[in-house]
Amino acid sequence: MKEDILKVLLTQQQLAQKVKELGEQITKDYQGKKLLLVSVLKGSVIFMADLMRSIDTYCQIDFLNVSSYGSGTKTSGTVKIIKDLDIDIRGYDVLIVEDILDSGMTLSYIKKILMERQPNSIKICTLLDKPERRQVTDVKADYKGFVIPDEFVVGYGLDFDETYRNLPYLGALKPEVYTV
Ligand code: IMP
Ligand code: MG
Image (cartoon, rainbow, N blue to C red; front, top):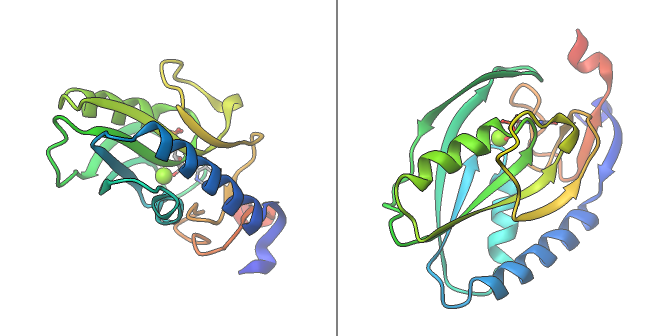
């Protein structure tokens, strides 16, 4: 698997340090609130697992799965719910936990449908942001790990064709891996 990686973009140490900082900020901001972390499956599971353990205040978790991509690297432009939340979010301070903000379509859609359920507040925490790729302008991250260039990345939960999620760091694939 590792032989398919062209270069390492973010090391395990860099990721761990950033997650710690985000957790500290969230801990401060959500004191006395009814925090619900909503992980967007599957890409954010590793980030979610690390982030929740760096948050030192009361919180609950839930999971949501939407589809916006086919199996490749390009968006299909359509978003639909595949697995909905278990919890009724009314009155909760929802923090959506996402792996990457790319075109923005996924997060824009998720935020819109969750707002309709009348949570107390709703914010977005994304590990990665690719601003060059943005197509939807009404979505922004309230918490953001790293801004990265327009390059397809894998690892730390992010996949190419459902593979490479278990890489412990964030890397770029060799072009031949996704062009064949
Ligand atoms: P958006 O709707 O275009 O913002 O799509 C965001 C979703 O696309 C993320 O949750 C990822 O699952 C996927 N995605 C976007 N860019 C990448 C990438 O570079 N590597 C892996 N997945 C990506
Ligand atoms: Mg995803």
